[in-house]
Length: 225
Image (cartoon, rainbow, N blue to C red; front, side):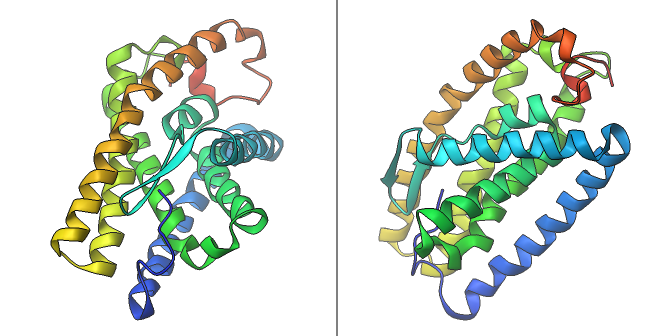
């Protein structure tokens, strides 16, 4: 999902800074809600876990270039279900930044676009979760249909934002459209994997109910709303 250097240039690149600033504002709101719910220590620990996980997703899990970008296995819905919206958003932003600083400094000028591409779909996942998960249902009790819906929302959002940046930077020429379609087709294969990963992680989390009050997980993982 990285926006390649040179894809969006000049004044158009400023759009990425604007969208990233808006995403940062939403993240701060989520962080404030998390602070009131579980305190600073819990938010900090969960954010650290999310950051380490995202960095591992980028550097350890398979990734390969397709079309206008790269296909990564970024388990956004998994992070949301286990850690909550605020830690997941913070982890995505910091993990991406650390990866850029240490291994891909050429990606830093595109950081605003890349972080938008990761965060806005996460916000959509949170909104969707409120609609399709009953208030009395802990996340550990989700079924495959619900996990699939959340994964599709996240990965579909990533594809939509990459397409937006590509169209913004390169227009609607046939070559660009073909590259976008190739990327989108490859990326949506992640949807076949992520729901299974979600359910596997949630199944493991069921055995950790004794840690439900430790602050390591989001409250909804083991409790009703």
